[in-house]
Picture 1 (cartoon, rainbow, N blue to C red):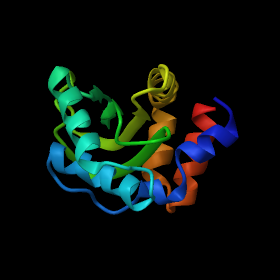
Picture 2 (picture 1 turned 120 degrees about the vertical axis):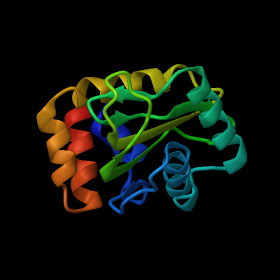
Picture 3 (picture 1 turned 90 degrees about the vertical axis):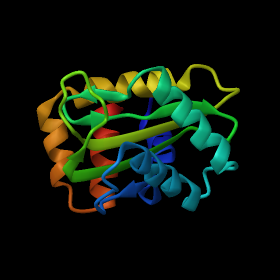
Picture 4 (picture 1 turned 30 degrees about the vertical axis):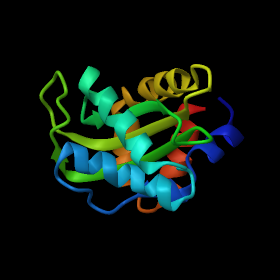
Length: 154
């Protein structure tokens, strides 16, 4: 995935540095609303249903304080990545029982290939590094978060 693809995937409108809600489903809706407000979602209800259905299959709390809700959906026209972070942490059902403090929501069009798997894989590889997670926690602007994601995932 190259830099310009990543800039399209996660623009500053898709990044929230506000404290998200304290419940898993509300965090997912918070992330989804960022995408709605950025004009990336054509059908909010469908996208939410697909995200929640995916959560029921297995948790998207991947451990190390990370939650990555994701879905293929007819509710978006283009691949989208939204970001939020929490200082308190939210129970995302991770296997390590650690609350999630970094959240990335991946939405890709239903008709797309396995773009979301490539995005998920690249993102997961970069987030295993504690230094990357620390940078994301310390970032003081949406632009800084975007830069970190682009540098670490590209």
